[in-house]
Length: 368
Image 1 (cartoon, rainbow, N blue to C red):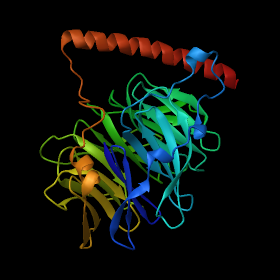
Image 2: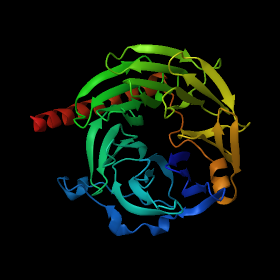
Image 3: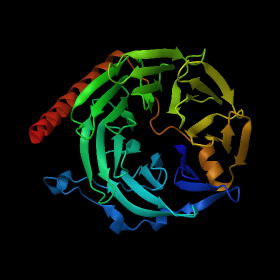
């Protein structure tokens, strides 16, 4: 997995175990930005304090090499990074004022490998989705992790509405769940319409959601009525959509496609689509900062403005090797619907649903 995010004036690339920072002032890539050797065991919180016995405490996973599985940024002025790894840890890093280094603050243990994470509106917590369909919340001040929601399918993306009052979950079962936040045991709505997994979601302050995934369609939803406002197959080829994000001014939605160098810019009012590319290399990840689109390809970081600004920074050394060898952490997300596999899948789904309903009932009872 490889990612690019912007945090204030910083451009962060995470790939494998490497976390690097592109320095605007020097035009150089700093691969010494953060080293995992600096993590102190005392900063890894081992428990929430709510487990009934020792056996139920989540355990840090021993790994030969740390791999970053998801990343999120708080933006300015906090300049925090949340990084989920294959150790089943969520790490919080603080970027220095000069942007040259990052300091490890705290880490919490999550039960399963994380797939997506996002800061809440106050930057006091990080919401984490995982492979098992569970959603946890980590308090940054203490590192304590508690379960707040669950689904019966793998969580592929998590997000918060722009007002911070709703938690939105995208999953492998073609659904988008809208939960009240922080009372996330309350499901307010479910968006139905995708025919394959939902990989990525984005938001506008007008209470609408954009989504895309395995069916190749970009969909626009009213979050209150859950009615689709628009549905559009972005490319003639029905390729899965990889990333959906809104620009800071909310005038456009940026969409990337799996294993493609192309990306789309969609007007949020007219739904007009323009297709662009910055190289012949497939896009690995993309992030919309106030100044540029930050585009990570297999060979370079590209700072791009549709108004004809383009700066390409070649990757080199271990970072170049790691990005070039990027593979999806989740593998093939399409379901194998042969009879035996489907029967097994439905059985697991039913068992998971029963567990989720049991937990939800307990939370409702506790809230009364």
